[in-house]
Amino acid sequence: MDKLVVSGGRRLDGTVAISGAKNAALPILAASLLTADTLEVSNLPTLHDVGTMLRLLERMGTTVERDDGRVRLRADAIASLEASYDLVKTMRASILVLGPMLARFGEARVSLPGGCAIGQRPVDQHIKGLQAMGASITIEQGYLLAKVERAGGRLKGARIVTDMVTVTGTENLMMAATLAEGTTVIENAAREPEIVDLADVLIAMGARVAGAGTDRIVVEGIETLHGASHAVMPDRIETGTFLCAAAATVSRHGGEVVVRGARPRTLDAVLDKLREAGVTLDCDHDSIRVRANGHALVGANVRTSEYPAFPTDMQAQFMALDCVASGTNRITETIFENRFMHVQELSRLGASIEIEGNTAIVKGVPRLSGANVMATDLRASAGLVIAALVADGDTTIDRIYHLDRGYQSMETKLTALGATIRRVAGRPSC
Ligand code: UD1
Image (cartoon, rainbow, N blue to C red; front, side, top):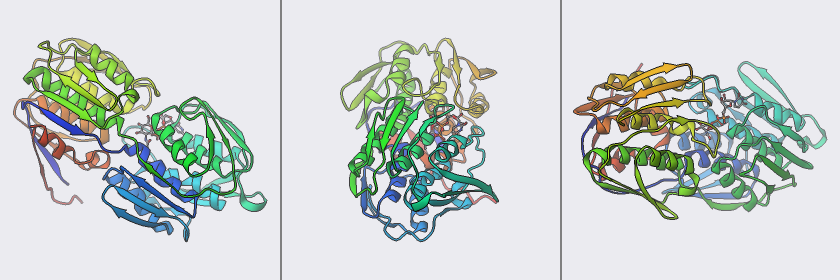
């Protein structure tokens, strides 16, 4: 398994370009199953998870043509309606093929994802919504067996009120509804920008979707969708991660970092918290500049919640920032029950953090010092990279495959900004 070795204490300076958003790309790729025509997707990030989704679609019979950052998908000869355990276990978002398959083919067999490092993450809301639309769903040998028993095998529109706000749940139901008979209303829908990006693709494919970005999405089903082409929105979590990395280093060593190709208006809560923490930011419509202001960071309290509030996917990175700020700050995680696994690893670098229930109390320390640490999940890995960038000496981060799932060329981008960071190929693990 590869490791990253970060020599901390370097000044970061320069411009970094943001890639396409993983969490927008995955549902958009799954949406290709809704039509026999070609869906062309550009600004596609080069990530393990994107590779997994493309492999899954290919196994089903989709023709996938790739060239640099662009893919053409044609699902006109689907031979298998199955998402098997070996792929689903490596990427929970594989569940996103369930809605489209059921909508277009009236049938699907998708492995249950199971738990993951950050919590249980059930898919009961996806199931509940599809059942309301007329699907019968049973679980056999770890697989969801879904079938539309109605004549013609077509889902029917329904009013669905989800028990909690779920991002991929909303996406699955929105995709399924595009080909259903009649109108579907999704109440308590997630409002994440990635849902709006997916809705834009569906609309470009001919679907009738209204209200994406609000908590009430209305989809009027039609019989067929056609091809389209779409550029994936910029990754707001990658943007926020680089802002935290820049803020942590700039406040100590000076420098100036510009994050380019971003969409600042999708990051209001993160930008507000960074400013509250003492970071100077200048935004225009597609870039954000982080500058030193001669003051130490003071940190900020954070409470994760659904969009537009502070994202759980930025919690670990912001915690790394609070670790080296001057005050004592509280970070409360409300979305996932086990998303503090990075706390132990940050403590190995000298951070002072206590956990009380779902709140981490972070007391800023004047310095962190390099150590061997272990990445436990995708965003935790990013938090460790940020801490390592400001720690004295070398930090070796093991299990970096987590980072590769969701960040395109992170070490290359950081190196271009002046960080000293290298990948060390590890032996394959047993
Ligand atoms: C998506 C994102 C992930 C992000 C998360 C929360 C993708 C591919 N992944 O994950 O990066 O961290 O949103 O912003 O977009 N829940 C249930 N039953 C369900 C569905 C969800 O109990 O059927 C619970 C989950 O366990 C969790 C909460 O609802 O506690 C929110 O989860 P959800 O929004 O569904 O997360 P994902 O869509 O899996």
